[in-house]
Image 1 (cartoon, rainbow, N blue to C red):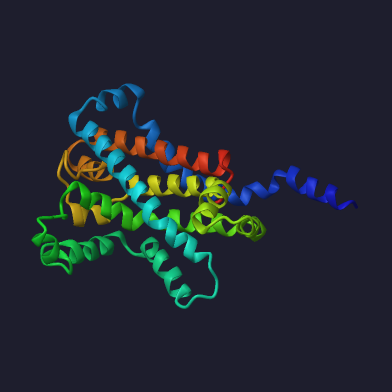
Image 2: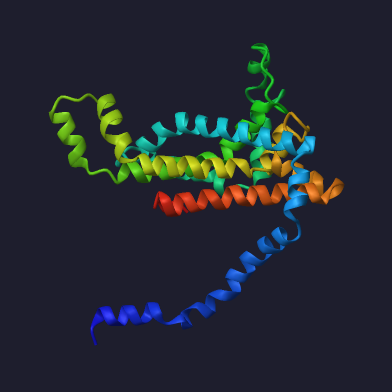
Length: 267
């Protein structure tokens, strides 16, 4: 039998779908039940509450700041990861992935022990008149610590996919490293960089544990959407459900853009 016909028959046969149903139902039913538990009227009504508005505004501003910082600080690291043969590459590679496997609460304690008043850098920052814990920038740093590996990994894959011949041709024409980066590397890896930024933003938007410990849960100052959801379970369940639906919507839309429009596999 023709090989293409075998593959076509395999694709058209729905039997292979049945073993996937338990897992797909396990993932989709909790999300569906959350959406069905609230009506559009309730969501719109809850969006007018001051605490909800403040949590959304703070989450959007801090996650954007964390993403921009990741773009600035993570791009040189991603470039370095594409260079093979330098000492300590495997250690650096593992260190970058460490925040993705650490419990977020551990990350929060680590940040507090670094930037807190009695932390490793706390005294130095205090002499400069800087206090980071339980502030807007504490939220940003917590999100940066947890979410930045998504960008670094995506950017490194994008940089590594560039054909070396393009870079070599530019250097032969007399381009310096900065010109090569601006005119060759960035345009050819733009989709990967944008995908990494979107994934970083979505992960920062949903960060909870490190933020709770390092930044606290102060409405209007450090209370992001995940923290407001946590409080909502004790005070107002409708608020918690509304914010949960908003976060699900943001996250799902981000994944659709990354995996669909940008056609860039990150996870």
